Image (cartoon, rainbow, N blue to C red; front, top):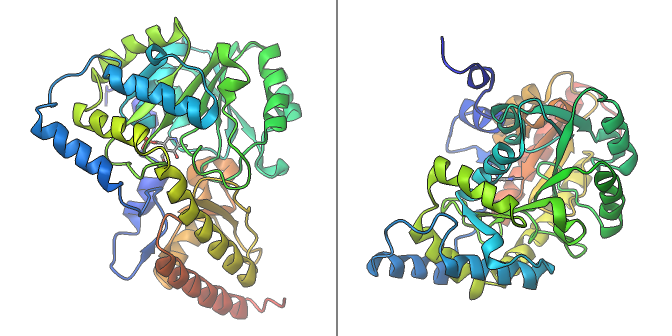
Length: 392
Ligand SMILES: Cc1ncc(COP(=O)(O)O)c(C=O)c1O
């Protein structure tokens, strides 16, 4: 084929490939894609219906409607103390477009981008599409957290690559870890010393369970590109609304990339967004309370089964280690679990080589479903352990 070589070299994400590979048999409980099971709040849906009836159905300004920019500026100030002006907010087609637009705007060909791994599957292909050079930092040895030391080492290991930026994502998909303010300040010191841009994907910020979420831009406003959105906080994955927030003149550069990729996000979705960010300021916290109960349920059951896992401080995922008796890859483990126990989880290798040896279980599912899924996992693990003569 004579099509673009960068595109030829990338694949549909392991998450979607695995999800498609195991099919959609009715008796399999899918704890795979990071899709909230909760419904979009009724008042948000009503606002979108009203927008259609009122003919809010044409192009919006490129950056998004002024009301939406204003609502987002207020909301992120109230929730996290961010001080972006309304004009510093760009409404995007989900956080996905926000990541793409940020990378395409920031990078020149060959610029290095640091990425702590395991990581959300979109970053590496998007860095490749922006012709950047990806430098991964394996966080496995530090409980999946990037430390100032490991960051410094990664920076020094690349003497010939101009490192432009680092992608941070916390709470983290797939591990559910997050960072304290003190840990972020330690990272900030190294980042500032090397004058890096930070692309901070905080799409799970509302789902932080044990401590307040610290937005990176409150520590490093001058070179942070903040990414957020309503997909997870307001159970709005299908509406496709995200945000890039960055100081001028950076955001003005982003606007150009955004225009030629998508023009703007849907005007109907923006009407829903205005409602969510103004009258739905507490919606995310209500949802968080539900996810927190499920976190306890899943963690308790995994512990009782004897599986090693990372206790999640945020998002709605648990990263679970393959049992030591299992002789195979995370893809093989997840395939067997799906076929034999009828529970689907995502192989850790979908999040980079650092995720091998683990699987990701999404607890964005009802407690009833989670309980049945964990019963099945317990029974299956028991049988497998008997076959392998495992003694506890
Ligand atoms: C870390 C992370 N960033 C971005 C996204 C994409 O968000 P959106 O649906 O708003 O494009 C996801 C979705 O799973 C995610 O986990």
